[in-house]
Length: 347
Image (cartoon, rainbow, N blue to C red):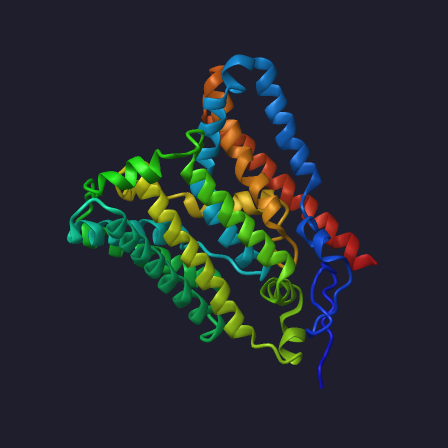
């Protein structure tokens, strides 16, 4: 006997052939739960800095800098969006990023050479290692029933420690030159950095998958009412393993992109990447309680700190104020999310 799952806080789930009924047009699911107010905040920040320093802030070079700064975090944030929508959390992505970059660099250096074959092997190693850590997270969360906070905090330490053991605490500074010139600093049509192209391609695919596919509908449904999903005959553990595996896979890709950008593993430079990714996702309107969120919102949430940091540098304000501003926006986002959930529960 099949059972219809109707999440109380996100009606955009399901299809007629699935256990979840479709209630709104498919194209609108791309925008459901995106935080319009946060979008206005980003626009206001851009306008303010544009008025203060129009020549410097609005230049094409500066726009490229902002987008490049946000690229790696956007890849991490896309995977984190899926995890948080299931009412989970992944604190391990920063450590997985570092570990994937280390093993990818070691693999490329072990092969030698400076061609696309070597670069593709490095990419495969980064993706595989990231997916392995993510799948481990999923198994421990979904099968062993260990809280996601504890699991991912543990794998954060394990992955970061393993990276330090492999490198002896010293960055891998030797990577194929082609990786840096063609991927890290290369540009599409001589204008758009390849890092930005890859990041937005990931966000686009992730957004479409979340909004328009069965995988996305199940992700929303589990975050809204996991027990109802189980009764509908859907394997919640299997889906959670896939979700955490996806987050790990994208953390591995982020490690590869970071390696390409900096030409080194930057072992000590990603200690707060997990918190930055979570903050970006929540600022973008994804609920920490699960069942609500979009990748479009995450894109906005990623660019708020990137624009603030860039703008503060240009106008001569200490960039430390960025942390204050982002923290305030994060608290406000969670506060308004609680108000929204309160209104829904009273209906």
